[in-house]
Length: 208
Image (cartoon, rainbow, N blue to C red):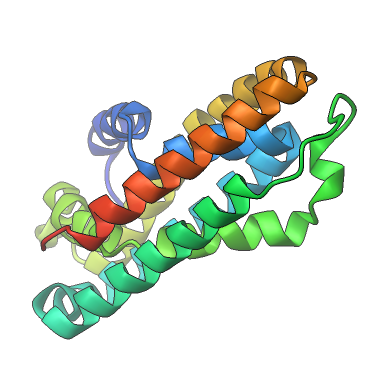
């Protein structure tokens, strides 16, 4: 297990990285604003589940194979881009109505959780980032490298859960107030759809 003097700086860096604007936290912000805090927090759990899978993949060494495979990288990014296009289409055609009560009630929790999982797992940049980032904090002399990576990955997930959970809570709170207006709802839906399309284009054009 990594020593405390390694874990503390790692946690600090993980928090800063989670705060940096990116597809995942933008996704959390938009889903929370559109569907409520509960939906946003459920998306966060899905994203963190994806991070857990990425951590396990790095720990067993499969990430290196993915990073070296042009086909695997291309397939993942195309699937991820298509999924974002699908989310954009859903946002554009989302109905406008009174969501002043509980926006999450209109959308099954399971669906929101799966959105988070798919969003994270279909982004090949995440597993490649973990492959490059986590080993920097591993001390090979201590042995149990896979265990060290799993602990670091779990610490990163905790930081992500705290940061993304805060984003979900605040955006859900303000979104619930703002989106009582049909005009604001329509504007948010179109903004979300546009952002999802932009993210899809960025992912589709991304290189390893």
